[in-house]
Image 1 (cartoon, one colour):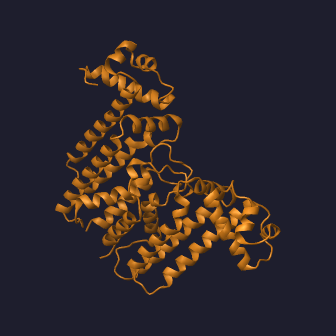
Image 2 (tube, one colour):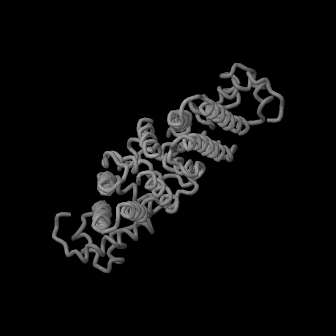
Image 3 (tube, helix red, strand yellow):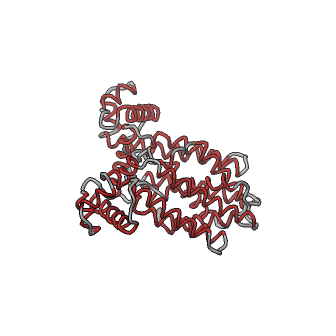
Length: 197
Length: 197
């Protein structure tokens, strides 16, 4: 992982690995598959990554980087805090979707991430909390009914937890029939209506 | 199920069945075990229930009756709506705990309920919505910031969904480390602070 990289080839490998992991599962994907999909020699893959575990780890951190860039992007716009909160949480929902699917590929990828990059779910959670807190702080500087943004970000995280299932969670939960994007948007708007004065 | 029952013996059988199902699993529990635990002859069990599936069904409906009685009890008190909402949802959490455990007994019981009494999770959900809506209506008649109690009850249900897992849901979800009773209470109080004027 410490080796110098040409960013372009590396991001091709990461992209190839993600799509293959989701399609065939981590177990069903070989270094050869990844090389072929990325259009490089298999020796090149080994130049970057010593084994599949290292690629899984890189994929997990690539997700974290993507999340960071997305969060900074939302925070950097001139939109008001209501729009920012909706854009950020709904955008994170969209990013999370592949990790919440119940097909074999997603389940294996989630397991592999927990094994090879066990710190990354915590990183995602902290980024979520920090981003929501920053937006609440902005609202508070306007006329939002917000006390402690850090604390209240945590309540928003808890109340939306069910919308971010980890792959492998049974999808047949009869009490969760309609946990889709529209419900998440409705829930957020309801909360915002209470928070805004 | 249509046979006349002496309520007392039946409730002993139901209690015996619930404790055995949770301890040994549904598969590991026989009609003989239930008879012995309830202190009746096995022939008596068959007088009430044709098979184990019928007992599972009865257990599921016993839970629904207990939920009904509890909800009516909370609604019937003289407490204010804030106290009622906390008492009701936290009490329902306490009632739900055995169904959300990840030990084998709870997982088998949840599966068996979905097979033999598939309508009961929907009954629990509707009761939850109706009870929360009734409490919100009460708050609205005071000075709560509530528009449509039925609609808003649904947002409260969705935002607390993750606290009511069905047995078999992986408990190791790294993003859900602390989904306990205290967090639920904190979340509800935060919502109430926003809803109250």
